[in-house]
Image (cartoon, rainbow, N blue to C red; front, top):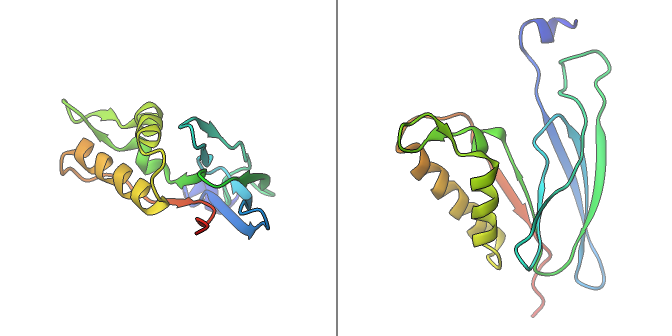
Length: 149
C-alpha cells in the first residue's frame, strides 16, 4: 500500500475537454479517477449517469484512469459535482443525506435552465437542506452547447 493511502491521502479526479461541433453540439471527453460520475440532463429532463470509472489517485499503486465521451446537443447539459452535494446532511433531523434522488429531482426541475442557473438552484437546495450547518466540500460544474442566436 502506498504511503499516501496509509495516511488517507488520495484524491478523486474528473478532467474533461470540450470541443464545439459545426452543428452546434459539444463533444465532451471526460477522464475519471474514482470521482462521482457526471450526469447528462437531456432537453426532456431525463438524467443519465455518464459512466467514467477509474480509481482514486494515490489509493493504490498504478491507479487506473478511465474515460468516456459524450456528445451534448443544444438543450442538454453535463453536470459534474463533488460527493459533498449528495452527502450533505440535513433535513428534519439534520442527519439525512441530500442524496442522488434529490439531486436528480432538482436537475429535472431545472430542465431548460442555463448551466449557471442550474448550479445556483442545486447549491441553494443543498444549503437549505443543511439548514445552516457545516458540510463537506460542495462544488458543481455544468456545461452545455452555446445557444445559437
